[in-house]
Image (spheres, rainbow, N blue to C red):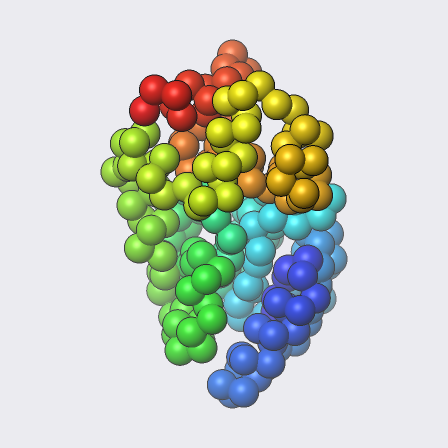
Length: 211
């Protein structure tokens, strides 16, 4: 089964998998329906987008963590537009069997997608090379800055100017949701997980100004 809030992406993945001879038993667009579908359909593998409604942060990854407890034999393949570590690292460490994590730009290659699903279904582990390097903490702050996209660097530069999300939206002519997504990706790539005593936005700006 496939869980992704993008209708186009989940339909496209379903078609690719079906053409490769794999049966897709359910398509869902949020974490709650994902859990319900797994309970009802008992799939071999759940392909899950890390970010889903309502906050588009870690709903998919949290649901995957819960599903691992409810269905220990379920293969889980996480997909993400950018590097995420909070829940994926825990799953990779605690339950590597039947677990995979790929960046979405990898799955445009049909063979990569089908191979990952097949290996996860068989109890194997599939990790994107960039994910492995990130989870192992091999990147310095300067390296992390280097892997920011051009748009992410634009957003971070505007953050360094003290601009609010609203002001950044106006300057770049982007939606608030898009800006929030870029900022979340920036904080993740700079390895700045949520900490009660730290202001991650300030730390990100400091990294940008003094790498």
